[in-house]
Length: 305
Image (tube, rainbow, N blue to C red):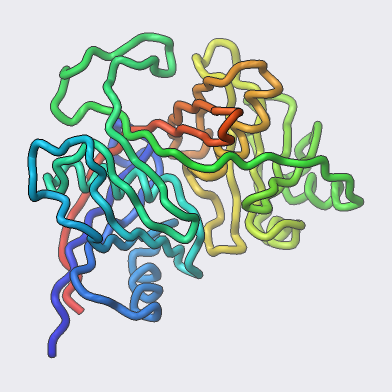
């Protein structure tokens, strides 16, 4: 029997502008597909992440139940492997569900390899990067999507590999190196936001750095920027030289910078060539991180095989 066509969308997450932020493919599965097919399609899209959605409940039966979560299974694949956690592809998936009218709820519950993750629509009358607010209802699709993710604390990293890490970052001056506990990334502190922007990464050397996933570089943002912190994220071990805006990396950045700067709310800028903005809140008691971002749909189509 022929397989049903699969509807897909490509969404730029953590941005309000097309061709900025971090692109992800979002695919709706009405029937099971094996992992080999899922991985092959992720290779075909050749984006940092492809997310696969499967409905778990009747999410559109009662328009009045806007506070009852719609429930979906969500899996994420890079062009190389399945991953446990991805922020921007979750933003993309939630945005697609909200925008398409496939859910009436303002809350979506995703069942993932990292457990249950919630995505919410939140009003636009929250602070943006320059400290101003955007009025509610200014545009029909103008809202933030808020993700509730686990915090990712980091520990000191005392290693003879410090020289290797500096060389992997093109000879950047390294102030401190830490290692995250959840994703096992290296968190590298640089002297300035400009240093983050100017990095010349050596991807072959980054592949040889310690850690299971990748290297996050970060610094305090320039005072005039309107942001609190800058960062970039490299993980060629998973086939992605630079992730333009990595949501899960900001779970580690939140744990580090909120303590260092003495506040629980941050506005972060991912200083990749595409760029992107993430609004962060750290709940220290529950060790959860709220990540807020916007998204833009740039294409849609159908997978025929």
